[in-house]
Amino acid sequence: MKIQNKWIRAAIPALLLHCSIGTVYCWSIFSQDIADYIGFSKGATEWAFSFAIFFLGMSAAFLGNIVEKDIHKSSLIAAISFALGMAGTGFFIYYGGLHKGSPVALIGIYVCYGFIMGIGLGTGYLSPVKTLMLWFEDRKGLATGLAVAGFGAAKAIASPIMEALLHNIKEGGIYKMFLILAAVYFVMMFTGHLLLAKPEGWHEPEKKEKNSGIMATLRKEPITSYIGIWLMFYINITCGLALISQEKMIVKCIGLAAMAGIISTISAVFNAGGRLGFSAWADHMKDRNTIYKLIFIISIVFTIIVLFTNGIKNGEGNLPLMILVLALIFVVNAGYGGGFSNVPTLLSDHYGMGSISAIHGITLSAWAFAGLTGNQIATLIVNNTGEFFEDSHGIMVNPVGYQNVLFFTITLYIVALLISFFMVKPCKKGVK
Image (cartoon, rainbow, N blue to C red):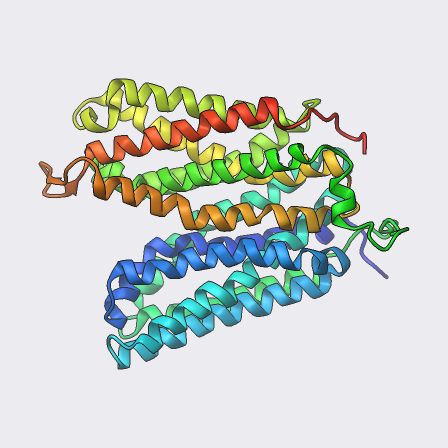
């Protein structure tokens, strides 16, 4: 007897998949340990994370049709690729420990954590999304928000576990941690793969013409609408990554170094809350694009306040400014998460459910390019503007550099707001 329950067949497997792959954002916890263990600089190993995000987006873009046709095949590919990538990363860390400074170890980590895990990330991210929207047809935003919130919350859940493993496994803790987690996440994702299923009554729309695929679907509306959605998504991720990548140092700059870990966890909660809250809120709006307008307006307002008050530069010892800077960090995290959870439902409102996995996959290419630009541009700004100096706690900081990152993000947020008003055509839900 087949189980036909939306929680067992959609929500739980989606959380199992997304809570596993979302741990990619735990990279900062162990990146320095990897660098020290294999004998490379932290900067050299950082590219593994950038490659992971890049191949997440690109694998989603190129494998979206596989997800569209067979979620069982795509979710199995996700489970195998993600676990194999983690295990392979562990092996090459082990190899790098035996052969310090070996380029084989570094390239192996790039391939495993970046490329192989990236395939698992892209297919795992896409696989449950359409299924959720089909099961929760009246509350699509809530459903996708729930799953994508799992991706955002994964860091908050996994971080203390990873830190405990690193501290309690003495010799070779870093590579052993990867091997242990590879097994754990495979079990979680394989269970999600077995449970995931579309509603029994759902039938994919028939393709009446040979060329009636994605391009025909996109032609339902002016192409400027889709370009606008892609650009809004790209800008929101780029701005989010630019600030989030500097978050730890900004927190130290305003004198809260001792609370950096707690603030990071709170940020992850806001990230997850934004994914669930903004998407559930959008279910009650006639046009989901209104959510993006709100995200951009709120982000612009808080950024202006911090820039006007020089909050990052003058925040140390000044409680009101500390609160303003933290509020900006939390707001950007929430908006960053909300942008992810709203894009599949916004696309479904514009283009229908027929090819949503493939269209969503192509749109996730924006994530790929943002992963290569957001962090790097922010780092470039910090390293080439302002001046590093030792603060009262002996920490090297560059307040002016961090403030200048905000000039970059506010410019992009304003561009994104204009796009949301003038390029993305309003679309009432359920008209397709």
